Length: 120
Image (cartoon, rainbow, N blue to C red; front, side):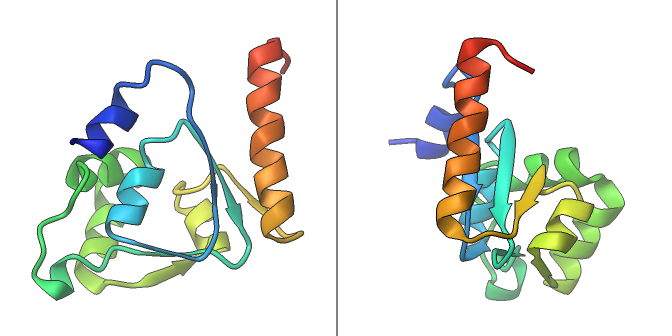
């Protein structure tokens, strides 16, 4: 089963609400979303190279597409952990929700509802 491929082939907008630690495959799954709402306590870490693991889920392609080549190389090679604000600044997240996990999930759900209704 190719879970990442299934996300890529959904054919409908995918909205992600993220919280906790996103490491390697978690970032890969997240980057298949069309819109990402991150809880303010979420962290993003590439983590694969320092563990000697090949990036999963097309991360070697999706990360540079999301943040640009130079920033992606910095994330790959330094293994810096980005907090939600830094992830937003780097274009890994579209917005940051500071009201907690439930509010983050509610915001993502509301965005999905707006898309279904065709609202801006």
